[in-house]
Image (cartoon, rainbow, N blue to C red; front, side, top):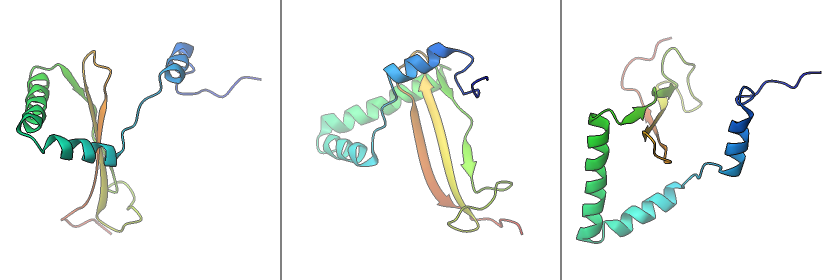
Length: 116
């Protein structure tokens, strides 16, 4: 009997690496708290702006990978439980060679006709 294929069955080292160093998910509350603390001082604000400038330079120079945007609830996908026009977009990117991968998740509502 053969085992069912998995996303990592073609390279077992991927499963071992994922188990030995799983991704760290950072909650919105933790991010909001850190940003609020940074915004309390001019040096914290400068750190945020400097980080954004670095990200722009990396992106402009081609040193980042931006994955295709995933959109749920947008035509031709079926509507979400939130109703016609509701959307959920996921954007993901990372700097080449970096250990950090960033995903942005945003909900919204289309301001256009959504079809039948």
